[in-house]
Amino acid sequence: MTNTLIDIGANLTHESFAPDLDAVLSAAWRAGLSHIIVTGSSRASSREAAALAKAHPGRLYSTAGVHPHEASHFDEHTSGALRDLYALPEVVAVGETGLDYNRNYSPVPDQERVFAEQLALAAETQLPVFLHQRDAHSRFLPILKEQRDQLSRAVVHCFTGTREELSDYLDLDLYIGITGWICDERRGQELQNLVKDIPRHRLLLETDAPYLQPRTIAPRPKHRRNVPEYLPWVLAQVAVCTGREAEEIARETTENARVFFGLDDLARGP
Image 1: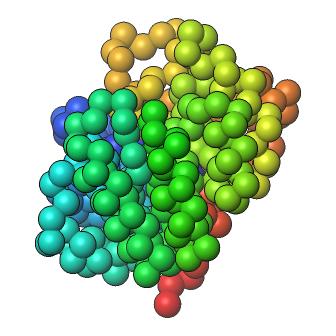
Image 2: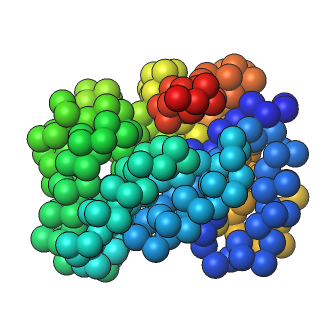
Protein backbone atom coordinates (compact mmCIF):
# COMPACT_ATOMS: atom_id res chain seq x y z
CA MET A 1 0.00 0.00 0.00
CA THR A 2 1.59 3.30 -1.04
CA ASN A 3 0.57 6.75 0.19
CA THR A 4 -3.05 5.78 0.75
CA LEU A 5 -3.66 6.49 4.44
CA ILE A 6 -4.17 9.66 6.46
CA ASP A 7 -3.65 9.63 10.23
CA ILE A 8 -6.15 12.22 11.45
CA GLY A 9 -4.72 12.46 14.95
CA ALA A 10 -1.14 12.06 16.18
CA ASN A 11 0.36 13.90 19.15
CA LEU A 12 3.73 14.45 17.51
CA THR A 13 4.62 17.32 19.85
CA HIS A 14 4.71 14.81 22.72
CA GLU A 15 8.11 14.69 24.40
CA SER A 16 8.59 11.04 23.43
CA PHE A 17 9.02 12.10 19.78
CA ALA A 18 11.70 14.73 20.41
CA PRO A 19 14.71 12.41 19.96
CA ASP A 20 13.67 10.74 16.69
CA LEU A 21 10.81 12.58 15.00
CA ASP A 22 12.46 12.55 11.56
CA ALA A 23 12.83 8.77 11.75
CA VAL A 24 9.22 8.41 12.93
CA LEU A 25 7.99 10.43 9.95
CA SER A 26 10.16 8.55 7.46
CA ALA A 27 8.79 5.25 8.78
CA ALA A 28 5.24 6.57 8.42
CA TRP A 29 5.74 7.50 4.78
CA ARG A 30 7.27 4.09 4.09
CA ALA A 31 4.27 2.44 5.75
CA GLY A 32 1.92 4.08 3.25
CA LEU A 33 0.77 7.27 4.94
CA SER A 34 0.38 10.37 2.80
CA HIS A 35 -0.52 12.88 5.53
CA ILE A 36 -0.61 13.21 9.31
CA ILE A 37 -2.71 15.71 11.23
CA VAL A 38 -0.76 16.79 14.32
CA THR A 39 -3.01 17.34 17.32
CA GLY A 40 -2.87 20.57 19.30
CA SER A 41 -4.15 20.21 22.86
CA SER A 42 -3.03 23.42 24.60
CA ARG A 43 -1.98 26.90 23.56
CA ALA A 44 1.68 25.86 23.62
CA SER A 45 1.28 22.50 21.90
CA SER A 46 -0.97 24.05 19.25
CA ARG A 47 1.79 26.51 18.39
CA GLU A 48 4.31 23.67 18.30
CA ALA A 49 2.01 21.57 16.11
CA ALA A 50 1.56 24.45 13.65
CA ALA A 51 5.31 25.02 13.50
CA LEU A 52 5.88 21.33 12.88
CA ALA A 53 3.31 21.32 10.09
CA LYS A 54 4.90 24.39 8.52
CA ALA A 55 8.25 22.61 8.54
CA HIS A 56 6.76 19.68 6.59
CA PRO A 57 4.48 21.35 4.02
CA GLY A 58 2.08 19.17 2.11
CA ARG A 59 2.63 16.23 4.47
CA LEU A 60 1.77 17.50 7.96
CA TYR A 61 -1.14 19.67 9.01
CA SER A 62 -2.27 20.55 12.52
CA THR A 63 -5.17 21.34 14.79
CA ALA A 64 -5.27 24.11 17.39
CA GLY A 65 -7.27 23.93 20.58
CA VAL A 66 -7.41 23.28 24.31
CA HIS A 67 -8.05 19.76 25.58
CA PRO A 68 -10.49 19.46 28.51
CA HIS A 69 -7.58 18.47 30.76
CA GLU A 70 -6.12 21.95 30.06
CA ALA A 71 -9.40 23.89 30.32
CA SER A 72 -8.49 25.61 33.60
CA HIS A 73 -5.58 27.29 31.76
CA PHE A 74 -7.86 28.83 29.10
CA ASP A 75 -7.70 32.59 29.81
CA GLU A 76 -8.53 35.84 28.05
CA HIS A 77 -5.43 35.55 25.88
CA THR A 78 -6.13 32.03 24.65
CA SER A 79 -8.91 32.85 22.19
CA GLY A 80 -6.74 35.45 20.50
CA ALA A 81 -3.80 33.07 20.30
CA LEU A 82 -6.01 30.40 18.74
CA ARG A 83 -7.49 32.85 16.24
CA ASP A 84 -3.97 33.70 15.11
CA LEU A 85 -3.28 30.03 14.54
CA TYR A 86 -6.54 29.48 12.64
CA ALA A 87 -5.38 32.06 10.09
CA LEU A 88 -2.45 29.81 9.13
CA PRO A 89 -2.93 27.52 6.10
CA GLU A 90 -1.36 24.55 7.89
CA VAL A 91 -3.92 24.69 10.74
CA VAL A 92 -6.95 22.75 9.52
CA ALA A 93 -9.22 22.20 12.55
CA VAL A 94 -10.33 23.51 15.93
CA GLY A 95 -9.46 21.24 18.82
CA GLU A 96 -8.77 18.95 20.48
CA THR A 97 -11.74 20.15 22.51
CA GLY A 98 -14.56 18.53 24.45
CA LEU A 99 -15.23 17.06 27.88
CA ASP A 100 -13.41 14.49 29.99
CA TYR A 101 -15.08 13.53 33.26
CA ASN A 102 -12.93 10.42 33.69
CA ARG A 103 -10.17 12.24 35.54
CA ASN A 104 -11.42 15.82 35.82
CA TYR A 105 -7.96 17.36 35.61
CA SER A 106 -9.86 20.62 35.08
CA PRO A 107 -13.08 21.44 36.97
CA VAL A 108 -16.28 20.53 35.15
CA PRO A 109 -17.54 24.14 34.87
CA ASP A 110 -14.25 25.16 33.24
CA GLN A 111 -14.42 22.24 30.83
CA GLU A 112 -17.95 23.07 29.74
CA ARG A 113 -17.25 26.80 29.34
CA VAL A 114 -14.09 26.22 27.32
CA PHE A 115 -15.76 23.58 25.15
CA ALA A 116 -18.59 25.97 24.28
CA GLU A 117 -16.10 28.79 23.57
CA GLN A 118 -14.12 26.64 21.16
CA LEU A 119 -17.27 25.51 19.37
CA ALA A 120 -18.06 29.21 18.91
CA LEU A 121 -14.58 29.71 17.43
CA ALA A 122 -15.23 26.83 15.04
CA ALA A 123 -18.52 28.39 14.00
CA GLU A 124 -16.79 31.73 13.49
CA THR A 125 -13.93 30.33 11.41
CA GLN A 126 -15.91 27.50 9.77
CA LEU A 127 -13.03 25.15 10.45
CA PRO A 128 -13.94 21.55 11.30
CA VAL A 129 -13.83 20.46 14.94
CA PHE A 130 -11.69 17.70 16.48
CA LEU A 131 -13.72 16.45 19.45
CA HIS A 132 -12.85 14.56 22.65
CA GLN A 133 -15.41 12.92 24.92
CA ARG A 134 -14.79 10.57 27.81
CA ASP A 135 -17.38 9.64 30.43
CA ALA A 136 -19.25 12.87 29.67
CA HIS A 137 -21.76 12.03 26.93
CA SER A 138 -24.79 13.33 28.83
CA ARG A 139 -23.32 16.86 28.92
CA PHE A 140 -21.19 16.71 25.77
CA LEU A 141 -24.18 16.02 23.52
CA PRO A 142 -26.41 18.97 24.51
CA ILE A 143 -23.52 21.44 24.41
CA LEU A 144 -22.59 20.21 20.95
CA LYS A 145 -26.22 20.18 19.78
CA GLU A 146 -26.65 23.80 20.75
CA GLN A 147 -24.07 24.91 18.18
CA ARG A 148 -24.13 22.06 15.67
CA ASP A 149 -26.09 23.98 13.04
CA GLN A 150 -23.40 26.67 12.98
CA LEU A 151 -20.50 24.20 12.60
CA SER A 152 -19.11 22.96 9.29
CA ARG A 153 -17.85 19.46 10.15
CA ALA A 154 -16.91 17.63 13.34
CA VAL A 155 -15.27 14.32 14.23
CA VAL A 156 -15.55 12.44 17.51
CA HIS A 157 -11.93 11.43 17.72
CA CYS A 158 -10.91 8.12 19.33
CA PHE A 159 -14.49 6.87 19.59
CA THR A 160 -14.83 4.15 22.25
CA GLY A 161 -18.48 4.65 23.18
CA THR A 162 -21.71 2.72 23.20
CA ARG A 163 -24.19 2.00 20.42
CA GLU A 164 -26.46 4.73 21.80
CA GLU A 165 -23.62 7.26 21.73
CA LEU A 166 -22.70 6.29 18.19
CA SER A 167 -26.31 6.74 17.12
CA ASP A 168 -26.45 10.17 18.76
CA TYR A 169 -23.30 11.29 16.93
CA LEU A 170 -24.42 9.97 13.58
CA ASP A 171 -27.75 11.74 14.04
CA LEU A 172 -25.71 14.95 14.22
CA ASP A 173 -23.90 13.98 11.00
CA LEU A 174 -20.55 13.67 12.77
CA TYR A 175 -17.50 11.79 11.55
CA ILE A 176 -16.13 8.99 13.73
CA GLY A 177 -12.41 8.46 14.36
CA ILE A 178 -11.19 4.91 15.05
CA THR A 179 -7.89 4.20 16.81
CA GLY A 180 -5.98 1.14 17.98
CA TRP A 181 -8.64 0.68 20.65
CA ILE A 182 -10.34 -1.54 18.08
CA CYS A 183 -7.28 -3.81 18.17
CA ASP A 184 -7.62 -4.44 21.92
CA GLU A 185 -9.11 -7.87 22.61
CA ARG A 186 -9.78 -6.85 26.22
CA ARG A 187 -11.39 -3.41 25.95
CA GLY A 188 -12.27 -3.10 22.27
CA GLN A 189 -14.92 -5.77 21.81
CA GLU A 190 -17.88 -3.39 21.76
CA LEU A 191 -16.15 -1.17 19.22
CA GLN A 192 -15.32 -4.21 17.10
CA ASN A 193 -19.05 -4.93 16.94
CA LEU A 194 -20.07 -1.32 16.27
CA VAL A 195 -17.62 -0.27 13.57
CA LYS A 196 -19.63 -1.90 10.79
CA ASP A 197 -22.50 0.46 11.65
CA ILE A 198 -20.46 3.57 10.89
CA PRO A 199 -21.43 4.85 7.42
CA ARG A 200 -18.57 4.58 4.96
CA HIS A 201 -18.53 8.32 4.31
CA ARG A 202 -18.19 9.09 8.04
CA LEU A 203 -15.29 6.78 8.98
CA LEU A 204 -11.81 8.16 9.74
CA LEU A 205 -8.64 6.42 10.98
CA GLU A 206 -6.07 7.64 13.50
CA THR A 207 -3.32 6.43 15.80
CA ASP A 208 -3.56 8.98 18.64
CA ALA A 209 0.19 8.37 18.88
CA PRO A 210 2.01 7.94 21.23
CA TYR A 211 -1.04 6.38 22.90
CA LEU A 212 -3.10 3.25 22.10
CA GLN A 213 -0.53 1.10 20.33
CA PRO A 214 -2.46 -1.63 18.44
CA ARG A 215 -2.24 -4.91 20.33
CA THR A 216 -2.52 -6.85 17.06
CA ILE A 217 0.96 -5.85 15.86
CA ALA A 218 3.03 -8.95 15.14
CA PRO A 219 5.70 -9.31 16.22
CA ARG A 220 4.90 -7.06 19.16
CA PRO A 221 7.24 -4.05 19.46
CA LYS A 222 9.61 -4.02 22.40
CA HIS A 223 8.46 -0.48 23.24
CA ARG A 224 4.95 0.69 24.12
CA ARG A 225 5.01 3.95 22.17
CA ASN A 226 2.48 4.15 19.35
CA VAL A 227 3.64 5.75 16.09
CA PRO A 228 1.86 6.72 12.84
CA GLU A 229 3.66 3.84 11.13
CA TYR A 230 1.23 1.51 12.92
CA LEU A 231 -1.93 2.98 11.33
CA PRO A 232 -2.17 0.06 8.84
CA TRP A 233 -2.84 -2.23 11.82
CA VAL A 234 -5.90 -0.16 12.71
CA LEU A 235 -7.01 -0.39 9.08
CA ALA A 236 -6.51 -4.15 9.07
CA GLN A 237 -8.65 -4.63 12.18
CA VAL A 238 -11.41 -2.43 10.78
CA ALA A 239 -11.35 -4.61 7.66
CA VAL A 240 -11.66 -7.77 9.76
CA CYS A 241 -14.54 -6.36 11.81
CA THR A 242 -16.48 -5.11 8.79
CA GLY A 243 -15.72 -8.03 6.49
CA ARG A 244 -14.47 -5.62 3.84
CA GLU A 245 -11.27 -5.23 1.84
CA ALA A 246 -8.60 -3.12 3.50
CA GLU A 247 -7.74 -1.38 0.22
CA GLU A 248 -11.33 -0.22 -0.20
CA ILE A 249 -11.48 1.13 3.35
CA ALA A 250 -8.13 2.86 2.83
CA ARG A 251 -9.43 4.65 -0.27
CA GLU A 252 -12.65 5.70 1.43
CA THR A 253 -11.11 6.92 4.70
CA THR A 254 -8.42 8.83 2.83
CA GLU A 255 -11.04 10.59 0.73
CA ASN A 256 -13.10 11.26 3.87
CA ALA A 257 -10.09 12.86 5.56
CA ARG A 258 -9.29 14.99 2.52
CA VAL A 259 -12.88 16.26 2.48
CA PHE A 260 -13.08 16.74 6.26
CA PHE A 261 -9.91 18.85 6.50
CA GLY A 262 -10.25 20.50 3.07
CA LEU A 263 -6.85 19.21 1.98
CA ASP A 264 -7.59 19.39 -1.73
CA ASP A 265 -8.46 23.09 -1.44
CA LEU A 266 -5.20 23.70 0.42
CA ALA A 267 -3.22 21.88 -2.26
CA ARG A 268 -4.73 24.13 -4.92
CA GLY A 269 -3.83 27.24 -2.95
CA PRO A 270 -5.60 30.62 -2.94
